[in-house]
Length: 54
Image (cartoon, rainbow, N blue to C red):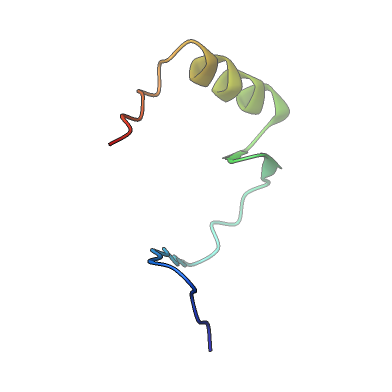
């Protein structure tokens, strides 16, 4: 059982294995180290959008 001390939201997802090699770093999961570096580059230049704080 999980209990939160404050208002909390959680997201739990699952799925069938895809049977491919994966590489992870921080919040990114890709197939190769090169794709991982491309994801970091895209994130840093704003290609993945921005979050607007309330």
